View (spheres, rainbow, N blue to C red):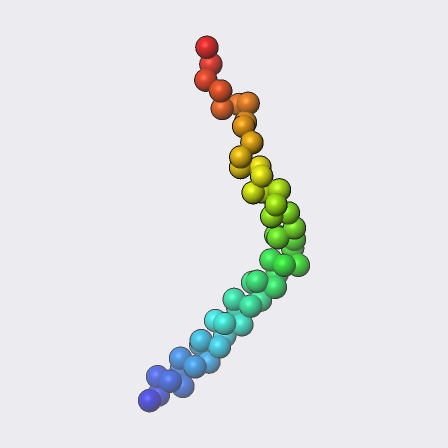
Length: 52
């Protein structure tokens, strides 16, 4: 039963850490251009052509 006294605050702290990391990623602009990233993967890169 004493393990619950350790694990409950630990899990709450871990959850708060995850929320803080998500909040930081929102404030840092990590999700600014999701449509551009989806289209960019389909574009051909001219540097990937084999040399003749």
